[in-house]
Image (cartoon, rainbow, N blue to C red):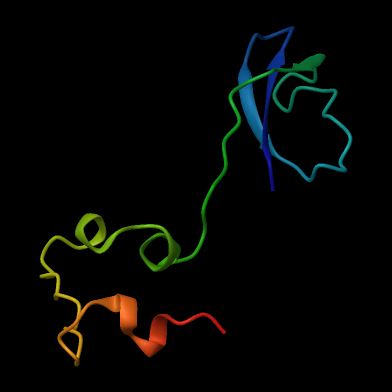
Length: 90
């Protein structure tokens, strides 16, 4: 759910509210019940759950510096990839 930022005109308090995009904007301050305006602020988002970063977006070197990178397995034929049947297009 998005987080929206509001400012109260009466008490000048700035606060954030987590709302659905379909929800109507807040019109009253939760502290003094004064009128509020929705502020235009930098967009942000919160990532929830464990492991999404390491699973999909991080390189092994960046995510875990203690791991040692293993070299790719050598070609069984010892030749170049040009003649390999695995690289032939279907």
